Image 1 (cartoon, helix red, strand yellow):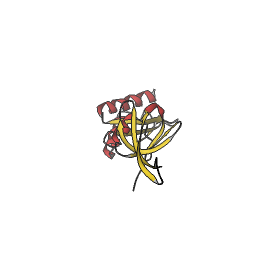
Image 2: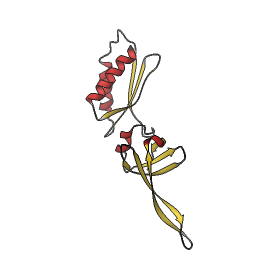
Image 3: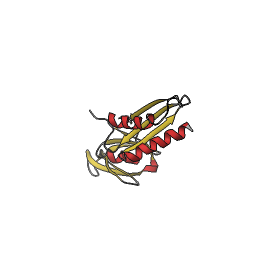
Image 4: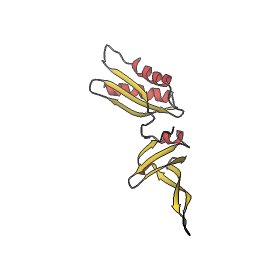
Length: 153
């Protein structure tokens, strides 16, 4: 009953704010509500406050004893939603698949998958030395085990 009510309030808030989307939502046994959101243009403190108020102001504290935590997905949090890839175009990702691990620049994000580009040094086809070669990989979302944005300083 409590979880259904919170889920409904959260869904209504996300319908109202189409630029935000849910990354994770849970309710622990002690009625601790934890909501993690992301947005097409990032998440501001005001966005977290909006979600928090949409839930908290519509639950009766006399009826339910609960705690509420609303936060944005962190910089090191793996990408789990297709919309997160679209907002990270041109950034460097580390993508693990079942058979490979690739670090490259995200150049394309479609409904089916992503495209990464990177450069690698390979031996020259003829003669001594190495040459820099540009590589690319198309990876479908279903093949991604984990994807993280690589923070560069």
